[in-house]
Structure formats: C-alpha cells, structure tokens
Length: 212
Figure (cartoon, rainbow, N blue to C red):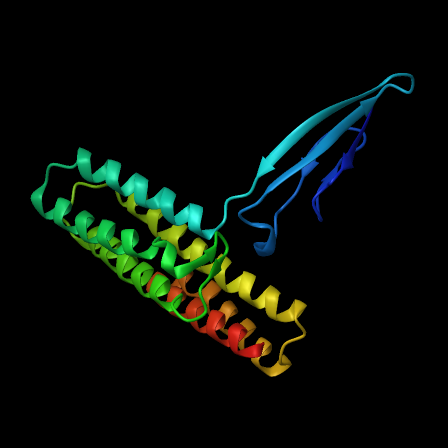
C-alpha cells in the first residue's frame, strides 16, 4: 500500500508513503482555522481517497477553553479561599476573551489588544499564587496546566504578529527586536517566571506591530 495527500493540503503537512503516518506541526499563522483535504491510499491497482478536516486551535479558543475549565473547577471547589482566587481568575479571563479586543481568533486589535496580555498576566499570577499556598487543595499539576495554556496562547499571538510583520516586509530592526523578546519569553517558564513570559510576548507583539 502507498499513502498520499491530495487537495488543499496545508503547508508543512506530510504523510509517510509507506506507513501512512501523518505529520504536521501547524505554524502560528495557521492557528484557528479548519483545513480540509484528502488522504489517499492505493495498492497499485485501485486507489481510495478519504476526505478529512483538521481544526487548529488558535489563541482565542485556547483562552476560552481555559476559562471553561476554570469555571468547572470553581464549581467543584469547596474551600472558600480557593473559590475566591478562582473567581478572580475567571474575572480576568472573561475580560480577556471579550470580542472588542480581538480582530479574529488569532489576531488582537492593535489599539486594544494589550488588555488581553494584561488580563492573562493577572490570571497567571493568581494561579501561581494558588500553587504556592500550602492550604490550597487544588492539585498543582492542574493549576500549572492552566498557566501553561495561557502562556501558549500569548506566545501564539506574538508569533503570529511577527509572521505577519515578516510577510509585510516590515522594519527589520523592529522584527529582530520582536524575535529577541519572543526568545526571552520562551526561556522564562523554565525559570518559574510565567508572568514574565507573558510580558515578553506582549513586548514582542508590540514591536511586531510597530514594524509595519
């Protein structure tokens, strides 16, 4: 059997012709879209084709997903202090996903989008505080999962803005500075500074916008 792809195959997607293993790591620019294409297989005599659709999750969807999960956790939590902290996180993320800050699922309004970074940073700080509190009964791994997803969402926003600036042949110096901020943000979580990562991604986003 020989496997292949046909139709509107997304850039970067491949399939091993011998094993049929599909490989694709969507770029930041590809986030938040649906890609429909075909997987084909043939035995050398009769080819067969199957239509598939792949949905890629963009920053806005990630934020909404975290918000929904935090709400579920809050409703299942009985400790008054934990509930108060989760209420604060819910308030932050509810504000962050407001339509007025977003142009689409992968792009922020250039004039108002900084608010999303600010609200995410506050949410991450509150979640990190819960991790440090000895009395909290919420598993650290669950809290860290929320933090990691929010950091990922803001990183995607920065990466998308940089990719857009490059495609628009923006100012090379501003793009270089944006890339430096992005790399600094990528290093921060390993140092236990997820809130710093979000600030660095915000700076990268702002520099990328300035480049065009």
